Amino acid sequence: MLYRSPSYKVFTICNYILLGLVSLLCILPVVHVFAVSLSSRAAATANIVNFWPVGFTTDAYKQTLANAHFLRALSIGVERTVLGTGITITLVLLAAYSLSKSDRYFAGRTAYAWFFVVPMLFGGGLIPSYLVVKGTGLLNTIWALVIPGAVSGYLLILMLNFFRTVPVELEEAALIDGAGHFTTLFRIYLPVSMAGIATISLFEMVGHWNAWFDGMIYLKNTNDYPLATFLQSIIAKEDFNLAGIRGRGRREHFQPHGQSFANLYRRAADHGGVSVFAKVLRQRHCARFREGLTF
Image (cartoon, rainbow, N blue to C red; front, side, top):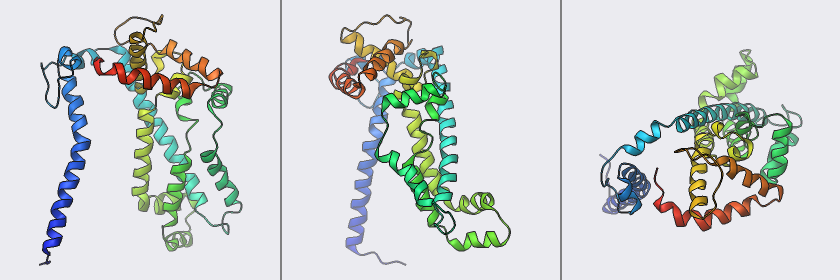
């Protein structure tokens, strides 16, 4: 039986307590939001809901799930997440496998590596990106949301270094048995790299699911918005209305006001002020008015 000293036992107890508190910090906000969603509108607006519903009701879920715009945005959001994650993982794995080879086997490897590293340091900006998407015919399509950022330099470097930890003897044995590069990649490298693949897949899924800004820029029809963009347009609509900025969009329940909001962003983009506009808007209005916003 393993002997545990008193100091080790004290450390273990403190460790459990600390990790338990950290876990509560992550779980309690989710519990609070869930309780608010099951509370009455008056209780949510009065900000009297803590971790248990006040005036229990499921009207918010009924209205949300009965709304055609929400369901369409949800399906588009799932489609974007699946497409974007699949394309990114495929391209990253192929590029990382190639760049993980030494210059002895891959001539010009360093030049190709810098081709991916430079965009990590210097971006073209919003307006050039918009012009590229428009010039390639991707505007107003779901491909405008997944193709421009399909290859992430950070994920590529992560998988490149992960592939370098695979013993070279495994690859040499496969090559002796007559395996090609694709066979070596899919039957040798990928099975021993599932931890790294799961990590970059999670990063990419969360990124696509939460991304809303590119939908505002590249999609003109609000019916084509993914879920994150759809919800952001609703929040922006409420912020504009509470601030006295009234638009001329539809007044249907849950209908996004994203068309006029996106037009404001595009006009700001023409003058290079997108980030300033967004920052001022969010800081001045969102914190002040979102407390009373319920669906």
